[in-house]
Image (spheres, rainbow, N blue to C red):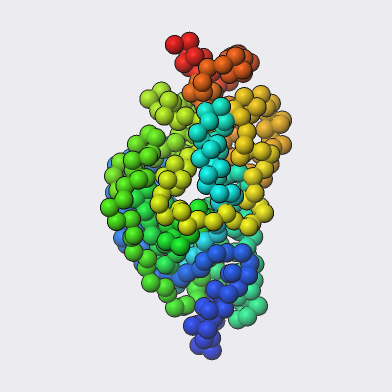
Length: 358
């Protein structure tokens, strides 16, 4: 962010903030808040989490030092952070539960069914910044969408967008937790919003339903056990101890959100970019396992799924096929990949075939 040597004395920041909220609604965000840059409490939580090695192989969580929890070090001149929320649930939750409950089906985390959210939110944040600039002239800002050392959930909590639940996702008591977050670091001294407080109470549903027991305590997630980590961040073999519990989840996991009581208030989004593509919300495992790499590249264009690569896509599906009910169709699909060029894939295929030999 360019730090502008500009006098802001003539600006009514209370009025500007109201306009920002209105413009934010117009460009497609569902809620907007403003926080200061004091993230000392989040700093302590992150430091302790890293000490416990709960981040696994995500070495990027260790990088950049204090820039992650001291916004003014990441972007000099930052005084405030505008935090935005954008809902993404593509359809009623019942459809997701039905897909999950049939082990012949492939379950893809709801956030990845449509267009890559990074692109969608970044475009809208640029539109918001443009509206501000048109109103007050040039100002200092920088946009982030899950793309830099930014503690977005802690910032959103301070901005009043929700509270960090026991599953470590952000929850809004009126709309649940099916939403993305984005930030605009700025040098505008806007009025800040009140922090949100936790409303989880004695509820432990997310802890109880986690398939791999990755939520090791309230507000504490061991990513090394999390299915989202195992199927997305993890580049190597999936540890055998977790393979059965992964079930038919081939990209991410939503269980802690699907069964959270607060998500009874969640509503499907009207954002067309988040609508499911290529039948990924209703696909069968065998269908996806037969895709060649060219087909996979074509069908994941513009999707967050692209980040894991074709090899890990096959690895994940092989595990899910090993967990499906035994049938000739399942065995035939696994045999089709038995001699794949990737040792990573063939090892998981062999494991899957062994599950059907028992």
